[in-house]
Length: 84
Image 1 (cartoon, one colour):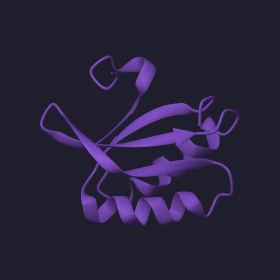
Image 2: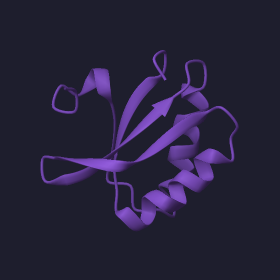
Image 3: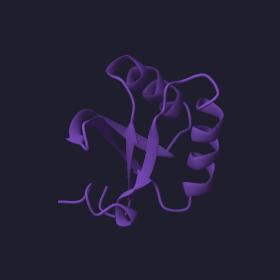
């Protein structure tokens, strides 16, 4: 997903499976990677968001926060600690 935006999501392993299922229901919006990276002591999962779908993705994340344990959501270009 070369042209995708990269987000990092802090959550638990159990929650990432549910988040992945919800995001996958929106065809072409985003792709959740289940392997994680420890950043500042938190498990951060990588999500590739299709260009042009960022607003929809952020809206879904906002609605999910009401029921799912999402500690943080960071866009990679905004988080130098998440980029390699």
